[in-house]
Image (cartoon, rainbow, N blue to C red):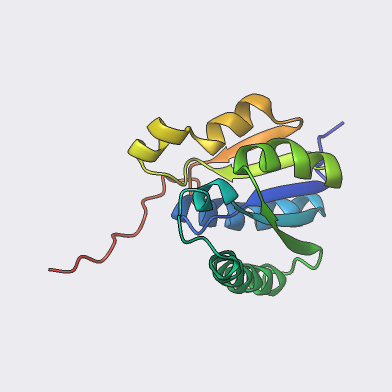
Length: 161
């Protein structure tokens, strides 16, 4: 019997790697006739160090995430995927992605970008992707390539000189 995934989770954080995972997630969901669940996790620990913390900061980040996720939903539907949704969660991205959402939504595959952080951030706080691959309660596919399965190269960031 061929493995067929029914509930696919793709975490998105605005990084190029997450964008690749999203695009591949659409393709896999279409092939498997699966549901695609997108999640953006707002790491509330990042706000604990800000002395003038107020709820408007969280609302601003949430609004930006909603705008991005709405675009992703439109792109998935344009590609022919009807069973797609998203959620915005708050807390530790590692545990939300590896445990909470997979348990709550019966996720059987997580498709996650190779990394959304730079090397220094990975050293300081650890890689979400590494944690998810080690501890998730379901299969995990780490996306490193584009739709053509060739190594993906992030677009050069514009430099202000």
